[in-house]
Image 1 (cartoon, helix red, strand yellow):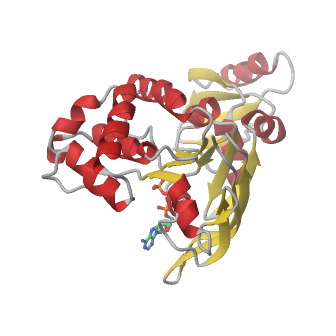
Image 2 (tube, helix red, strand yellow; image 1 turned 180 degrees about the vertical axis):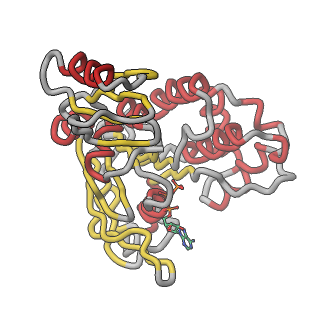
Length: 300
Ligand SMILES: Nc1ncnc2c1ncn2[C@@H]1O[C@H](COP(=O)(O)OP(=O)(O)OP(=O)(O)O)[C@@H](O)[C@H]1O
């Protein structure tokens, strides 16, 4: 199970606005790729184009060798399961009706759609949503229903738009524990705002910034390439002269730790200047630092 996804020069314009500005990447058979980026950077637009839901303004995407927006669309669509961040659902339907009606639009028989969706929902611990009315479901429960539908057709490629968003840490961990089982062997693309989630759950990370690909690679390689050194963040209402921060924000300054003793040297520069330090934290190299290094912006 599983197959490759290859995007070449994918572009999307909405009126005069460019949402995705020529993005190329490939995800190998059975790999899990995470698309990271701030709000509005083009993640959803990219995932919708890859899934065959939104027609690109230019470029191409192949899934298992089939051209999603060309003559292979029928085969490609049958191989992809897409779970939008906020799946459109009629509020008066029950979860089970949603699965059979929308599953039917995707070509699934009612029996297969219900059986497979129930199997996935049991794995996710959300089987009770089938008997409940959509209007009474939480955002997380609706997302679970969307994910169950995406997996019901037993797709080779699974595309999930921010599966973990809006969930607290514990709910997100339990969702991922189940997703890992449900994914087995499949090629997966998902988007996330969370660098920790990206690092833990993906083999490759694609960082989007203003519709472009700012960096692409394995998490460890990206960290090694863009942010190999730890930083120390000092929280104080001002910074002393003579130290060179790599980054400053409201109430804090960041300094690179380049040699043993740097943290003590920085702390004593603050105390020597008579500045009261509220807190000092060491930021280990992570995708958060990579994101900052390649885009010049902090992840939210
Ligand atoms: N249907 C649309 N019509 C017009 N503009 C759109 C449409 N969809 C997206 N955009 C614009 O395209 C850009 C990228 O949006 P997109 O939703 O892909 O970003 P995103 O990275 O997924 O953001 P978020 O993290 O907030 O979900 C934004 O400027 C957005 O306003």
